[in-house]
Amino acid sequence: MKNGHRPNHPDQKYIDGIRANDSGIVKEIFREFYPSIKAYVLKNRGTVNDAEDLFHESLKIIFLQAQGGLILEHSFGGLLHTICKRRWINTLKRQNRFKDDIENQPEPTTNQTVIEDMAAEEKQLLYRRHFKKLHDRCQEILNLSFEGLNYRKIAEQVGLNYSFVRRRAGECIKHLTDSIKGDPLYDELKDE
Image (cartoon, rainbow, N blue to C red; front, top):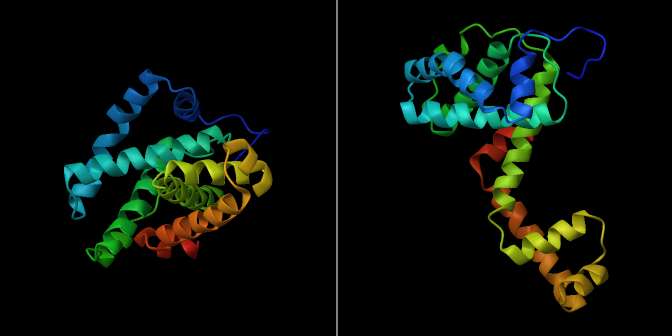
């Protein structure tokens, strides 16, 4: 949804505020949009805690999109509600609490690119959550590998034996992959 030709939607202020970590805008977002999200979750087999978690996670997704230069073409409320609804339905499905009557509710107007971006951001959040669970040494080795260093350079940089680093990197990747695949969210996201 990067757009350099059209004027910004009036709600772009929310995206810009999230991007800039503007506490006033974030408070306004909570004041303006949280009550409707909470009502939606409570109406659809959720609790207040569920609504708070859902709202925070959805704002994280929007924050990541904002960092990537998100330009709104539709209302911020529509985007936020779409993300929250989609994530809540997925949560209910994972917990076997889903009923079809939720899906029959009208969908706010959103651009298909936003839906695709949301799926990509959810995959990133899933990856980051499991990456942070890795041992510090694994994170260090994999980060250096992702930066393009070969195992010999990594071994030199971290002061370890080359064969240990190579073996450990393989173990870390396997552990990370298994951890991600074991997450219930993985099955939902792999087809998107």
